[in-house]
Length: 130
Image (cartoon, rainbow, N blue to C red; front, side, top):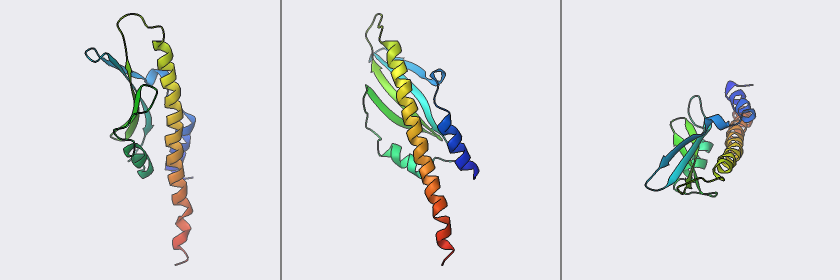
């Protein structure tokens, strides 16, 4: 089995962890920014992953304002959560919900990458008959 397919399969098994969530905030806009890596390529991002993320560029989806970002060889999931001053007992649950969403998105991106590699493998024999 080629190394790139092994890498994809290994990443399908491993999922994002709570410790990978990065939290930042903007006091003026009263927004928390959550981000987590979803896909990391060793060489370059597969075309299908780039296309998937670029087709969603400038768009957000729920919950809150969630989007994908490409940073070099990495795809991140980013979410903007508005906050109010004071104690908010739902904040922990929002972070856990973000982690669950990240796990589903992670699995989707690696399945897309695996499908791209699998299709390439199927087409290797097509040139032999020419």
